[in-house]
Length: 338
Ligand code: NAD
Ligand code: UFG
Image (cartoon, rainbow, N blue to C red; front, side):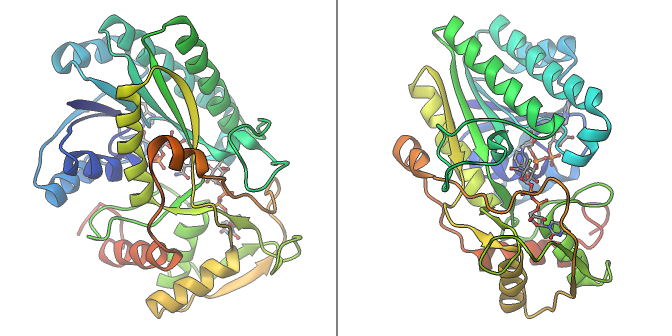
């Protein structure tokens, strides 16, 4: 069975490629490398000993997509491709709406033309905005606080509408919480372009001396230690969730939104402590003002994923920190030069 990954060279796409290949699927990647490098796919092949068919193309380019579908005839699609920096989306909303929405529309139209009826989509916990209930169930009220978040919200709606209109379509909307960690081989991991915004890449930069110190954004939140609480999920657990979602999509039609998280919240200081304990490396940090827009506490209710996908996370916070550090230590300049 052949699975087409849009954005297959990215952080989550590359880890999912490994898990799909190891589960016996064939993998085709379509990526324009706007936020990744083809080297990631070569490393997926090195880890698995299996081939990835890679196309360099913009998913917004429908003619290119049609050529790829004509040649590959995929059985299902996982749609990772998208721009994902929250701050950049506030500064450049049109770029985000154009890229994330156009790519989805071109993909859905192409899937329809070629009779491909199964799609798994990378949504985000950001669609919950400030949650009213914790842990957050899929039934929680939705609302976003950035153009990036609204693209996820709108794409979810487009996919749900399409699943109502086309009874053969199967749509799985995976709402990821906070993916961190790397493949235990140390060969693939998160390799952000430019200055990172997220916590773990900054922890790694502070630990490696690339950055003087980690700024902890706010120590006065209504949480046990005053720092924000999130549901960090190991990217390998997340990737395995996609294999389960593909299996589910093959057996069902209609649409389902499913949280992928651990169900446990950890604070920024928990991450620093776990990192220092599991790696033996100090993380110099300083408490600063709150970052505008941050929500004090968010963590998932992952029971629907357990029920529908028979999926649960297995990795610990220490695994997430240790594997992130192993990738960073082995690839101090990302994929550029090993
Ligand atoms: P990533 O940037 O590493 O991967 C996205 C990939 O898509 C990149 O390889 C990029 O080059 C490619 N891409 C973007 N636009 C494209 C286009 N028009 N045509 C072809 N390729 C294109 O990001 P990631 O962390 O792997 O995230 C994957 C998906 O999961 C994204 O949709 C993201 O919004 C979503 N998501 C990520 C997180 C997170 O914290 N990492 C959380 C929730 C949801
Ligand atoms: N943080 C710091 N210092 C840093 C970076 C982050 O203290 O240098 C803190 C933040 O204030 C927050 C926590 O670490 O409390 C996590 O921040 P991230 O930026 O790593 O993650 P967010 O939860 O803010 O954002 C993530 C994804 C977004 C998504 C959002 C909502 O990165 O794409 O979850 O689901 F929109």
